[in-house]
Length: 313
Image 1 (cartoon, one colour):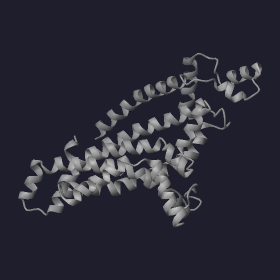
Image 2 (cartoon, one colour):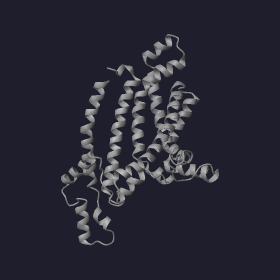
Image 3 (cartoon, one colour):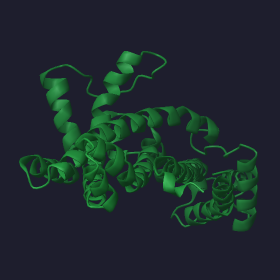
Image 4 (spheres, one colour):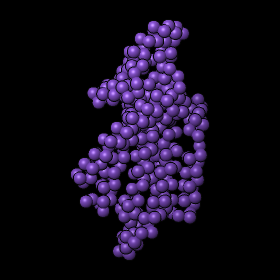
């Protein structure tokens, strides 16, 4: 286990270096001049030159990358050209919002998708199976913005149970916080639940046809024990991979859902930064997201070892 963890950690370092170079290089390809955007209507050449010097926009790309990565290694992600505040503080402000929304969404997906996939596989070719597959088709096909508007109309406008938009932090009022995030969390979790259901069903069908499951049944074990302990445990590997990737996607920001429910998360932050050519914010948010993806993949690899004893060296 320790050797495996060390090997994976050593692989992370060159991966992060390559990712940082790609983020910085692709960012420079965006059209437009951030100095012109910052200068506003008064395009005084002296002002433009001062802005370019302050943010090193006149320097060659390798020099700009050196200063940026030097700051990143010291914990300084740069300064927002538009908001005049540090990128690290913006990330620290928006990350808890996105973490809460992503955590609730993935919880919804796990609570719905995995049980539905298990039931669908165990009750193959029955009404339960057809119903679960119909749910999966509905979840994958339903646009998030349409489902969000529908939920707002039903639970906010018609019934008046939940607020239509806005966000309240957990520290301020946990009840209001859950009330403002339960609908967007369900919207995001609904689609992921459908995907998890399909993957869980496929993995369970494959596991239940394996020799060790037939052996367990031949020993006279209860069907529930055979399904949950033997089949499900070995079928969880692809589900863990998918769950980690989907959670990383949620952390990168669900733009449409955050816009519909006015959630001030990563999605809105990065969209505003791209439109305003705020290079430092885009680079910082994308780097944090990419690092999160890599860490989640590492955690998924460790979960494989814990779930499947055969992988333990």
